[in-house]
Image 1 (cartoon, helix red, strand yellow):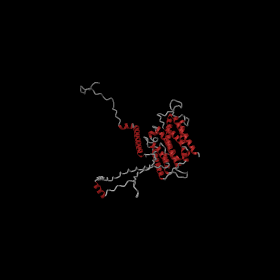
Image 2 (cartoon, one colour):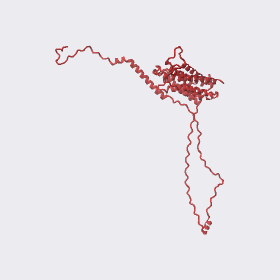
Image 3 (tube, helix red, strand yellow):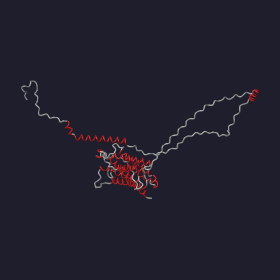
Length: 400
């Protein structure tokens, strides 16, 4: 390149531009190109705020459920101070005091020279002291009287509340990320197992335990609570499953209040207990079949993704049913005592409680005689035992 004629000497030549300069993209166009990522981020932030708000609301509004405790009122004993008063006319055993010497005797003693006895000093009487104040007796403890059916209903409230209000994210199966996408499928299936027991229990409570016969009207509180628990567990909105389950808890608490005031009834009869045990036996039989089967209904092998679902659903059933049978032992004590069946009920509770405490790090489905564990088979052992005991208990109660 040769310098031009009119260019001043001593300066380097300026290279000519190679082409037209590329204009920069406006920021709006860049945002539109990334709009899918932005929309997904906004959706995640929105639902995260909803989860946090729902958790705070559940913690502030969840009732404190506590089982009332019998307290025997001790007999209040008030100390009494008794003073012994001599009755009038009684003869004292003490010798009478000698009278003072008369004037004649005093003169005679002087004449004879006998020394006079020095009079004893007169002791001044101490001022009377005020009696020490008596300690007030302790106030008697208030005796909490439980009505029949209260323990059973509170146990039902407890198993629902522990899954709706107590966990970190509350009720999981209806959440978008944790439930629909199966991020926490183990917790989801355990909560579904608890819900299955709660639904069967409240159905028996509504159909049998609150009615003396089929001609008696349904209890409105229990009937409404049953309808709320029948809402699909994966309903997120219109209506929300967790919201309806909380309303069911409130209806059951009103039913307990009516029981205490005598406005509602609970009939712990043997035939009603047999109906409850029949429903429990059906649930245990279904869980036992899912734990021991090798193929699905269509003939395909049980996949690894379904193994832990069956395991945790069955464990949720054992967790809820063990607590309900503990309540049955209290409210149906007289009926069980007449049949001598307390030992069978304790055996069923022990098997269910042991099954609910299994905590494998990873649910494996190895061969029955393999080196790895088959956790489905391990859990089925306890559930099969509980099913057998419940069936035996049902037969014993049905016999005269």
